[in-house]
Image (cartoon, rainbow, N blue to C red; front, side):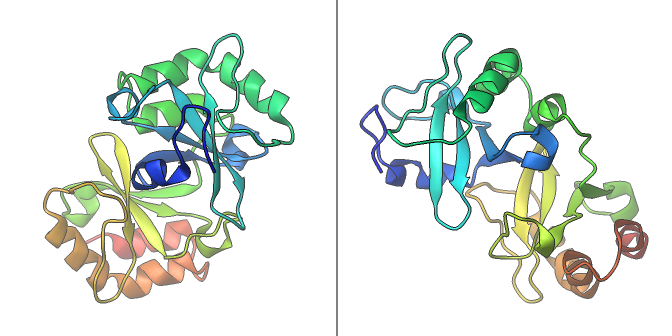
Length: 216
């Protein structure tokens, strides 16, 4: 898979995990959208503003699309069903997408601004309730999400950005190449609370039940 600026998907593999995800149920689009919170700082040729769409959940098919106010285009030669819908969405949300690309707003601020539906698919466990150094976000759909993750996970809020961490009984790990301050404390908390976290991920208990059980 080669992009029109001469890069291949391999050139993007490291950063695909460092993008904020906007799910179709929130955006109203036919595909999941990934926005790069390190946009303009990427060290790559022809670093034009872009988003990624996840074209095919059954394969590792991500397609970059230019963030352009007048004429968004796919940066790879492929057929994208309902592309006009995506292009119109980019034009409509151009200012938000560019502010995020330029690191003027955080992932959270961008996702809230871009979502047609409120961000109610993640349950917030506040640091004041856990004693942890940061807030924890639990995926309300967990294993039932149409875009299934390979690993159960939660997200840790660091400087306004969601950082995915595996829910593992023995060795929780950060799932992107970003350092989380005081991660050992968070990892120990995940191991301690594993039975609750995995029951929530599997849909056995509700958001409200999980939040109540996770409070210290």
